[in-house]
Image (cartoon, rainbow, N blue to C red):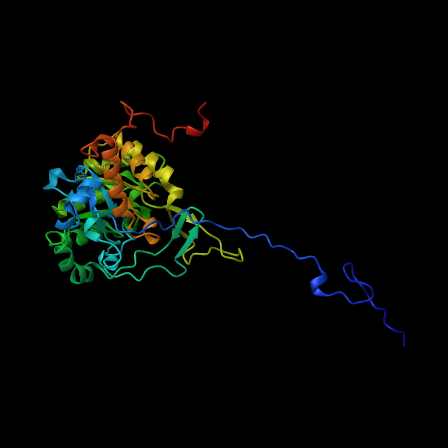
Length: 389
């Protein structure tokens, strides 16, 4: 029997067998995704608009902050009013029903709370996984999980009625009849300041066509809800259309008091093994800074053709975003995805907006609205924009 030869490798010394420590170390390549939504300074801030926190600090607060700024806005002056103390709201689906954040932020200093989507009957929501982070936002597929309108009112309406901050209930449904039934149930309930229609739902009567991407469908559900309630009515438009302007005009003509823009964009993420989608339902709604340019474009287009107020939604994370949306024609903004990282952001943005107005020697933020709008409506962006010279 032959003796086995001793094998040495490069890196072994003399006749000593190679060891793991002798081999050159391999540095793995790691892709780090830095979130575009990060927490910021949470130190206590003085109240919005310059009012002191307590009588004992009145002089110092006024001296530090300067003159008060009028940040108030009425979103539905023709409907008896939906007056907000400031133009920074929280978006539906990111702030629950308001009570969930009561211990981490002074909710009375928010402009208004848009509740999570509420339907006629309870919904268990979509199959998990439901959420995944993207490099510039969030992809989610919660599926309107909620206990139904009756349970919502039973649990929260009495609390809302005692708040100073207005609560706007976001509603959804699979048919016009669903929307109408929920709106009628909300009508006249103390604590419900208004309704926001989520039109990004499939219309079961028309083969699943989304209400929000069809001018006739959007007009029909808006008109039906308008007849069912005297509450101020905000309608959220979908970005998933070639030209949003005809839809916005139809919504206005059908009785909406306010337009909110935009809802999420459809997106997809693959699982780790890349054999299928990561989310349980395959697709999800993309929100966060990634959609801000799309939302800004749509707000700018809608503001050129409608006369009712516009509330901008999409990737608001700092004061510059608020100023951009105001310049594009919005009178208010909703903060959404960024709240998950920093629940106090909406309050701080209102403070910063007031400070910016003082810096510009403005007694109100209204001169900041619409400064980027053209004198006459321009062509829609969908008209071959990428091919223009």
